[in-house]
Image 1 (tube, rainbow, N blue to C red):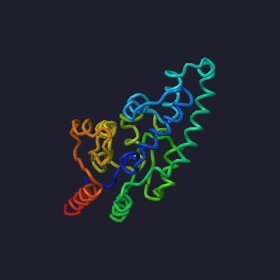
Image 2: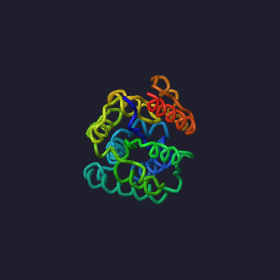
Image 3: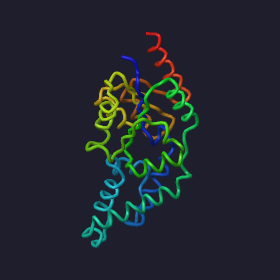
Image 4: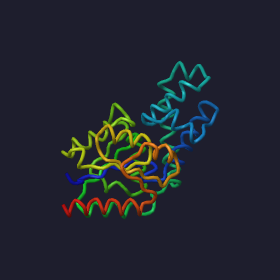
Length: 233
């Protein structure tokens, strides 16, 4: 089967948002727990479920305020709304990686379906796609709010395939993280690891994804070759 769909991760793959995410999270952490976390600690401790799940875990594990712990749902809701507000107000710190829009346009021109599978929640995903002018590229968007089992599980990829009526060998996943490789493997799709953001690079390589690219230009060339191979067949 030929490739009919390219599934993209968002943070660290399409958009340079990791620093904004870490900064937004630490804004909440400092306000509600009095401490900050390193860029390495935040993903390992709190990533997986969307923002609400990470913030709930933050307050449950690190808040020493009994009032917060006894009224956890109220304070989680308040902290999540503050996270959204901070994230949107400071979104000018996030950028689309150079060449990504041109690559997405190229793939659309070739008639491929484009999908987005991100661990972010719907609200932050919508903010980023709108702020960066990316909304119109994707035929389907699956966020962390749309699945029961988050990355590293492949439920989101399977939802994309089912919605578009595709088989696993008709899609390829582009992502930057270990969780993307794991999710792609579980869903049975081939994986391109995009390693232009230095976060977690060595761990990703050790998982032996199907393809590894170190720049957006390399990604576009690889996808062009894969599409041409299909045409030649």
